[in-house]
Amino acid sequence: MSKAVREWYRHYEVEWDDQASSFLCDAAIELYNEGCRSVEEMATVLIGTYVGLAATRVNAPSWAHCIDRPNQIGLNSTNSQCM
Image (tube, rainbow, N blue to C red; front, side):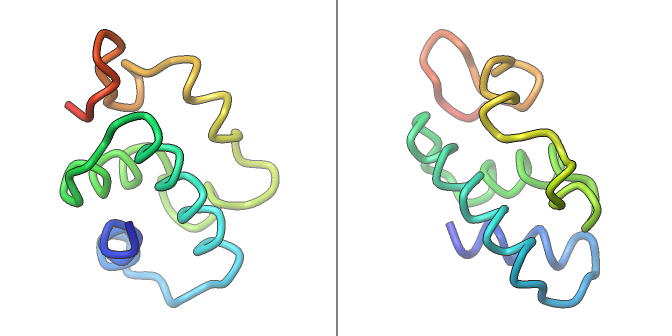
């Protein structure tokens, strides 16, 4: 999961941020709990869902809200695996 979060940082070319890291780690844990086991696919979902540092802030959509729409964040609703 930490590798997926690091890939998010590399992709958006932002400096380490404790608040963003906590947010992204929580999101990665939720992905894992939903059945995602691939680092590459977890990183892809994080990158596609949380576009830039501002998307990780308090006013950003909560992860639970995104889970209600699994196909929009790259999860297959039939087996809860990363696509």
